[in-house]
Length: 268
Image 1 (cartoon, rainbow, N blue to C red):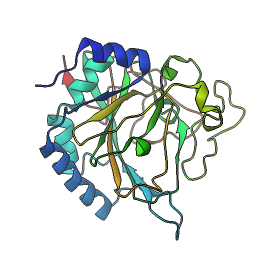
Image 2 (cartoon, helix red, strand yellow):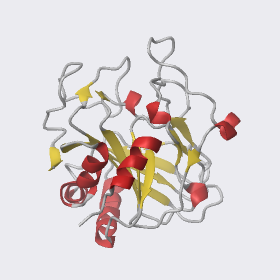
Image 3 (tube, rainbow, N blue to C red):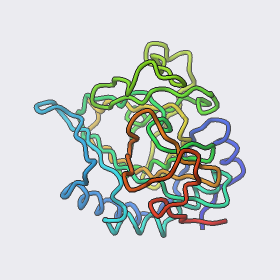
Image 4 (tube, one colour):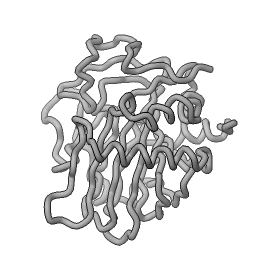
């Protein structure tokens, strides 16, 4: 039985990112680790390597494979993740939007650029949360970083290409270039944590976040993210191809997210 307290919910609403300690049993982490091996032995169509040939370390990812990988599917359907997401969102239901595996090997120079996720996605709504579950111990200096309270801002920032850190677009109404946070870090309340296996970070899809290089880290950093949407989520058409693109989804802007690609996996 999981324990999501009123304090967790209040902190999530206020900060947009919280650390949840020890909510996932070791067998889930072991199963996901097996799934990750299977995933990258046979990458999906969206797999990307962000490290250039000859550079140290390795930064790579893949997503939208949960329907093909048993370990991922079992985690989504049977682990506490969906219930955690639903309770934090204050939603009567939790739909899976997609899963996303991101791996940084020791010595990787690439930082994950500051961004927030919602402009990448074909979804709008306030009930929208990601659970970032590390499969390895994570030192605080290697942990993803989050700008506290940034999900309250009404601004939408251009998505950035992880390969180049360039904006997806330019001069598009309703979108701005994200500020240079690293040049002015003292102006922000930046959240990060030392994580043990079984811990996870829950963050709103509008919360600005990034992740540092792992140049001085001796262990890999495998993060298994699950993206969840609630009752108020609506399909959104963006000025660019969304990431993930979901080519099979033919919904119209503003439609409910009722679609076989986004099944309800928890109900209150």
